[in-house]
Amino acid sequence: MNEAKYVIVGGGAAGLIAALTLEAAGHSPVLLEAADEVGGRLRTDEVDGFLLDRGFQVLLTEYPEVKRYLDLDALGVQAFRPGGHVHMRQQHFRFADPLREPAQLFRSALSPVGTLNDKIRLAQLGFRLMRLSPEECFQHVREQSTIDYLWSYGFSEQIVERFFRPFFGGIFLEQQLRTPAAMFRFILKMFAQGSAVLPAGGIQAVARQLAGKLTRTEIRTGTRVVSVADDQVRLDDGSTIPTRAVIVACAPDPLFPQLAGSSLAWKSTTNLYFYSTRRLKENRLINLVADPTSTINTFCVLDEVAPSYKLRKQGGSLISVSLKECPDGDSLAQAEQDLLRHSRLPNDALSFLRRYDVKHALPQLDSVAFTYNSTHSRLIDRVFLAGDQQLNGSLDAAMRSGRLAAEGALRI
Ligand SMILES: Cc1cc2nc3c(=O)[nH]c(=O)nc-3n(C[C@H](O)[C@H](O)[C@H](O)COP(=O)(O)OP(=O)(O)OC[C@H]3O[C@@H](n4cnc5c(N)ncnc54)[C@H](O)[C@@H]3O)c2cc1C
Picture 1: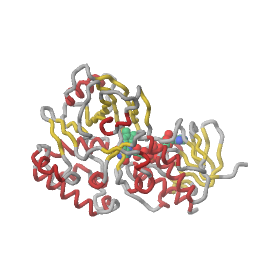
Picture 2: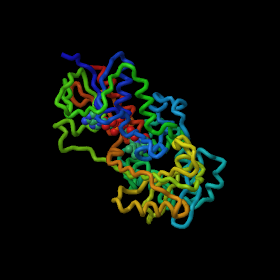
Picture 3: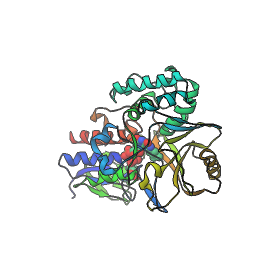
Picture 4: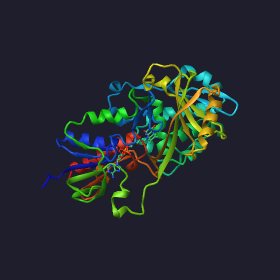
């Protein structure tokens, strides 16, 4: 009879942090991951001499759990410049972040992205959020959507359509900005106080760094769990593993008959990568497309921000494009046309590299939280839940949920 161990189901950020927490308490957990590698939604492929993340994603250096667990120097992080380029149907503008680049304030104040009043309000809101703790960003606004919050704060339609909708639509992966305002406040605070960066080795390097810290965890990849009970987990080959406690660090609904009929809803995204023979200069800024006729929400010149994403020495640019919706196959040509239009590249400059349709990119949550008491993660006696869906759709939440679930399991 095998000794009953702490078992973690899922090797994304939440599962890896749960394993680190259990190791720190002197245990040797077993981590079961269905995919061929750990990382979950933090995965990177090598394609034709480029690093391509499976879906455009940035790491925010100000996330409390990032500061707690990640060695950003060792990750060789490379930062986006604050602000963005806004592309409208006929016009293109630079939009500086008045909080991060005060020297650009005058230029920014004159840009038509918003009114002067908008920019003053944005600066006021940023300074207000900087005085709040991350947890306080989640208080008093739980029932309000981001869009309602923006209207009630007095922002104009101009800045909502030209900045907030493309920028936060790209982060929340929904254009209506129905995501709870608490999340908007938290993310705005993170941008105001820290940087958006990419690790030298791609976003998967985050997961690899966490996994590299594990010394006593048995990691089994290619191992799918099909059901979880109080004292054992069952694998898809029919075998079972006895458990002292289980941390389910993935969507729980498929694993428990009790949760049937209450499956989690997910937001999806489509990300395209192109190589341009002509070098594109965007000053390490994200490009926001505020043109309702375009299929594109944002694009960026990845190798300008992260030269390491180009594995070989070659000219040209690596461009990542995030679409507004997950379109059918034919829309690829339209997206390419839109990219040529916004980037003003010549017709023959682009070659298509890869398309990623991420069906389960972010959980769709009507209410979000920064944290909770670790016992709240307990589903049944010796089963604890982790994953970003427990708190809010962010890497920070995934990491915190893993720690809290492990702390809960250690208390029984
Ligand atoms: C395209 C994209 C863009 C994003 N952008 C950002 C961003 O800019 N900022 C930000 O903070 N967050 C962003 N996120 C969200 C962030 O990546 C996630 O919040 C975080 O990675 C979730 O980690 P997790 O451990 O909760 O879940 P996951 O990473 O989904 O891990 C769950 C793991 O469980 C495994 N698994 C599932 N079922 C089973 C089973 N039955 N048996 C065994 N294993 C199983 C899966 O294979 C997976 O590895 C983005 C996500 C995507 C996809």
